[in-house]
Length: 370
Ligand SMILES: [Mg+2]
Image 1 (tube, helix red, strand yellow):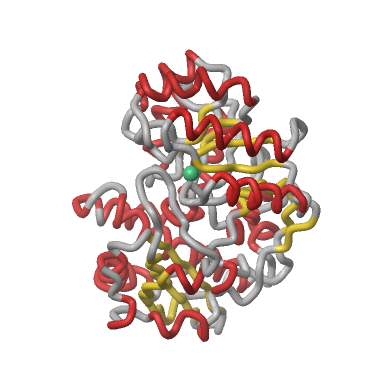
Image 2 (cartoon, helix red, strand yellow):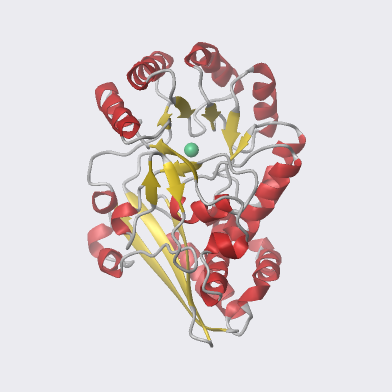
């Protein structure tokens, strides 16, 4: 089996299309546009695979150009079964473009497409192709909800609780007083038997994070996510030693090597690798390194692909259910009573609707939101 053809595409999709319910924000940003860069791969035997990555509003054209100019020429003619060596070759070839960032996410899109086409060609869902450890796992409901009022936040979290989710995640990163009031309101609304996680999206330094943790600890948080920027491994290590609340991070780490110092220093207890930055190959390396360090993995976002990866490793903790792309997809992920089950169609099964995306193929005048 050889890669016969590849097609890279770039879309800029405004918030109104994928999240018509209102504003969507976290501590350092509000999301008004998502850029999707997709890669379709076809083999000489007629199998097709799909990969993609995304950014929050910027840089999609750079990822698209790197795919077209530097990555697609390396894929055509190759056997998709060599995906793991291709991932390494591409990281070596593109090292001087940068060891993470645009390079990593472009390689991830290609890597996801190659794993998908392997599983499609084998007529197996990706989790079965990789090797089954479980056939479903607990999902937690997550929302990018710092832009909501406290009343709207409580309504949103209570709605997820009523749908059967036993764990919820909310944003923090307002003033200390506002954060405490919002966490208290949600905790009282959802009850003590519900797990509650909070996500600061890199809002603080070590001293401020320590101050916040002292007032948030009484709310029995299941974890505090990204209190600090990802480069501050030392800060994470100091903070983790000083608190009983597990620290989570990893969504803004782009290569497996960036996780290594976190594991060596015991700097976090919940690694959160993301396939759209690491690829399937890099994601599985992080999961394996976490297992060696005695840690679980809790995948970040993109539940439709991560449900397969999580079911194919022994140490997945849970799945982040954040249905941001649901309106753009041909089929939503199946969640029942807070449990996520991978689809039994071949490959990872995640496909964007051509009808939904095609008006937003970049560049277009109407989505030049400035
Ligand atoms: Mg997060």
